[in-house]
Image (cartoon, rainbow, N blue to C red; front, side, top):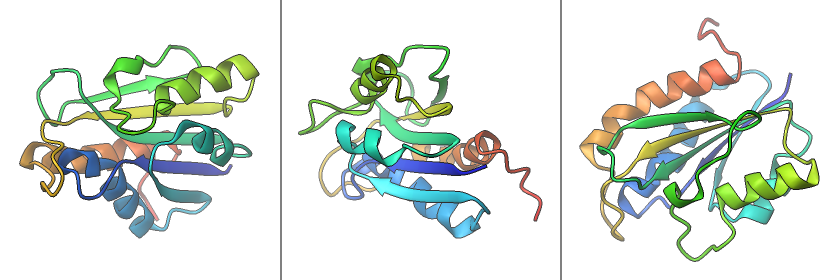
Length: 153
């Protein structure tokens, strides 16, 4: 089985850095059969990048008003991704739009899991908030579960 883990976000915009930091943490695990990518979140590029993988896990910051560090998980084959939760910055065609376009075109990966981590601070130059940093190990565990890794090597 081949899997792709994508961490979306900007490393220097506060809690938006959760995706790239997750990508670094998962890459350091060197999981067999798992490709890891830190990504800017532009939707058409995402659609191209996840082609050919059996399982894809995407991690991105969300902005719903929930408590910072809250985690939500979607199995995209069975449910629609709420577009308003994912900040798009300069990209009007972001993650949620890419998922729905891929669904319409029949180009979703066989398994697509999206994990959202609620952010609270997105200012340029801000560090990752303590709440989001505390959630990161749980997100790594969810990613490992989604790619089928038991954590035992």
